[in-house]
Length: 127
Image (tube, rainbow, N blue to C red; front, side, top):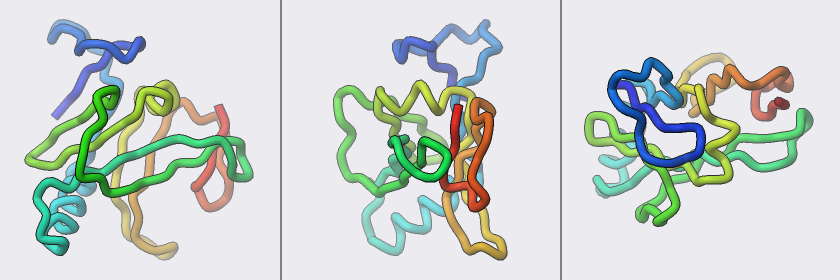
């Protein structure tokens, strides 16, 4: 599924636009649905936010939410919802939120083409 959002965090662009600005991977959707089942709460949503800090300047945080704020944008895919607040959106445009399992553990990650550098563990980035 492709969600197209304009750069001003406004209404979705028409289907004729080829600019994809945020993706929610199948793996991330599966993990969120698993968490919903474990918590017996199908209304849980995944929030991704960007904050100043970390060794590279900005860091991603993920949380589970039960309510969407009026200023949030959402990406819905197969019954799972990803929330993005307005201030974080500018750093996430063009990114893919994914869930990976590897030697460092299992976690949600952001594959962000806007990041010019990241720290060794990938938890922080700079633009």
